[in-house]
Image (cartoon, rainbow, N blue to C red; front, side):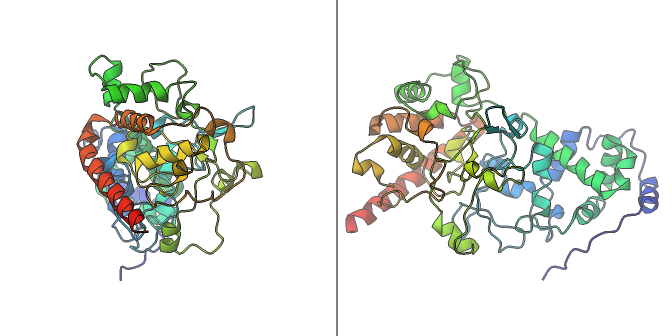
Length: 406
């Protein structure tokens, strides 16, 4: 078994002596900027208890900054550094996260912004500071222990002194804060938000949408025929450059429990994920079951879907939304299970106004919306689309075969 991490006790004099041994930094170019340092920290597995997990483990750049690792719950939730702990929510993409405003309550009572699905951290730096100390994620016991790991690396000692000032090392609290700021600086770079999708190229006149994609685009932005833009549109003028496809507000859309994930992570019977109401800054029962509207950037390559990863297929999510506008019993069936969509985990506070806007969609329009959503995939991830489409096709065929046997 790996040795437990012992909290480090820091004394300003000891750290000052350590810093005095660091070579002169005037010519150091290893980490020229805070973002450069943040990139190294983002990939550093030494910042977890067993030295097996980094930010990039659950936010893999090769998979649109989501977690591709399979677990007992599929890819619905992530496994921690201890090799056994599983979360209860799907890991959101870190791509385009920099555009989320700070968590706040507007004058009309609407909550908006923040990081994590419940907005419990106001900004990227706050988000970066959470996972290292989360016992079911990176599992470090305290900030002192994290900083002790930082100081194992002489290049980090040099870089922190250079970029944040030598006094940063005097206290673990300030060093830890500097670490989160560096990671936030990296997450604020264009590596996370390149805006290179086919949709962006279409706006720039560099690509042409297929007829199906164009129909999906028209439906998506329609004020009459769909409810997509009620929540997944930031800019009010279309076409808009640098649209993030979320208004960063919070809604309860009636997502059912992911029973497989709950069985796998050992949640206590009766546990309810209250979403926004679990944010320490929120005490209004009317916020129960609400989660932050996610960006749809790279949505086609970031399965599974919803806050708990309950749906595996992008088309299933569109079918789920459509159930609020149809009376056809066949349209109330989850195509992944062949059974009706299950009841919401939190039945109160459902966003009926937003969800029931527009008529029911037929298969042609559902497929068109899915086709348009695929155009929101950044160029670097477009090769993943064919692989994912093959997986989705196989899953649908398996579900259909299972349904026919019943």
